[in-house]
Length: 297
Image 1 (cartoon, rainbow, N blue to C red):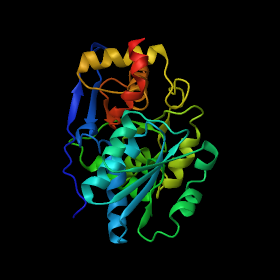
Image 2: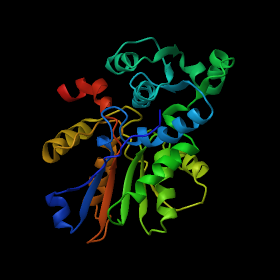
Image 3: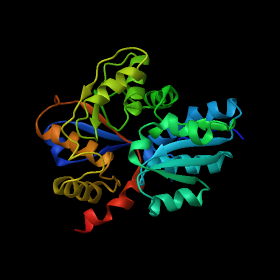
């Protein structure tokens, strides 16, 4: 079975009085529409990892994530679609939630491990599957050179050039891919990276490790809202308003923080009149399942 998904990822313009007042043109690339579950950067990061697993004749994908991990979910769905067995190491105590239910429904075996053991992912893989010649290691979030390659292809799909491209960052692989794509196309576009974790400056180090060619980009570390998976009332309020205004669903872990950063920088007159700005919608909408109480409060 070939490893392929037809990419349907249109670019939509976002209309807003705020943008009109500053003569800005803001767009979003809807990677959330690639696949209902293997969506956004999840497919882009998995694509060449799955190709490599198939080339190595591996039949068992082993990966890692938290209890609400979109990466675990995407890997489970991809494994089922393309004929692999799948195991996910889950960080923390044994729990049951909607995300893990859908992982199991796709046939993924889940192994819960304490947070200290989880830090040594290669050690976990070796301990449980070191003798399994069919097992293929996929890092948390799919972070890898293959992920960078997959994400770099996004830039070649764009219908026009932009002055600025925004993306959220957890591991830095998606950002590294976009930056690589910009470099390959010799564009003057500036990539703006929004770490979703507290003290996210380390994301810059991770991006630099993944880049084959050093390149400039902007890292905005002040939009984490308390850390990974953390929110504040102003973020939840922004997401509610954004979804109601645009009809585009976003969530608080990644895309909500990225769009909030973009809008905030617009209000601070960060951009020049006439600038074209593209926000990458990286999917991950199942992250909303663990955040329902934040929106109902």
